[in-house]
Image (cartoon, rainbow, N blue to C red; front, side):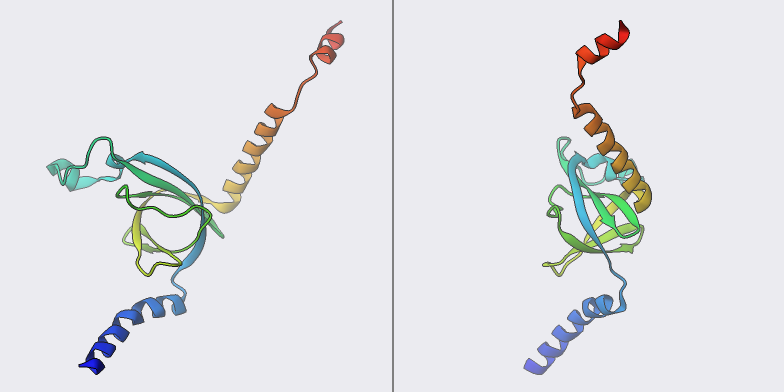
Length: 150
């Protein structure tokens, strides 16, 4: 009995270990989180037929996940799908979704992909935003502006 239980346990753990060794997981960091409407993640037949009703006020997490080459904006399907910020996660594509696995957890959570951007483009946009913010915070000397008009 112990032998068969051990064998079953080993076969259950094998796919996760093989997936890591084969390198199907990519690595990324969660840099942003905000809460959005869960209704926007429901599509197709379930919406048309009414599906399982969610409360109107329920919010789902929306994360920005930065990897080496691509930045993803992913949306959880339920309000309980939480990932800690600044946490290194493993992810892979699975049936038009992103399957995310947090390092300390052995299970995957499925997220809908809302947006994908190249990392180089995202970095350029972030730098532009930082430059605009720093320009707004720099004090302007109004007396100097008045003198140049005269």
